[in-house]
Picture 1 (cartoon, one colour):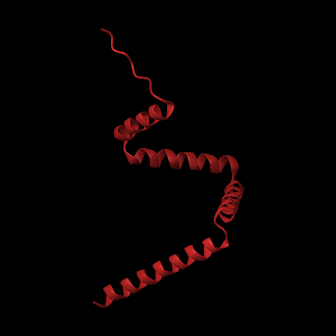
Picture 2: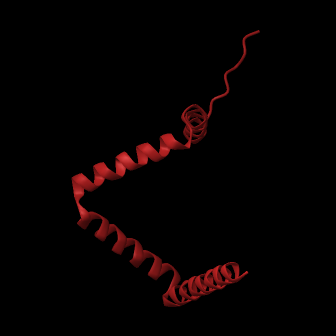
Picture 3: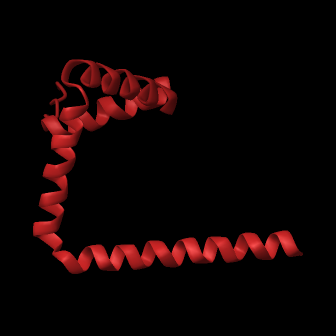
Length: 94
């Protein structure tokens, strides 16, 4: 009796290949290739490219979540900073 091969989707094949690569090379590999890619894009397109995509992303977030979103995350960030400062003062005093 011949075994039937189970076909897998492209997504499944990609996940399998990614997992194998991750085990073989580790997280440093992804950091290194990401940095190389970022440098290549920067050299090819320049700082204006990052400005344009940042603005595009900002508009998309604004349209999706509205102006109250920025107030909410700003408040959360402010509270986080306040708590970190408080914790640092307490640890330096005691």
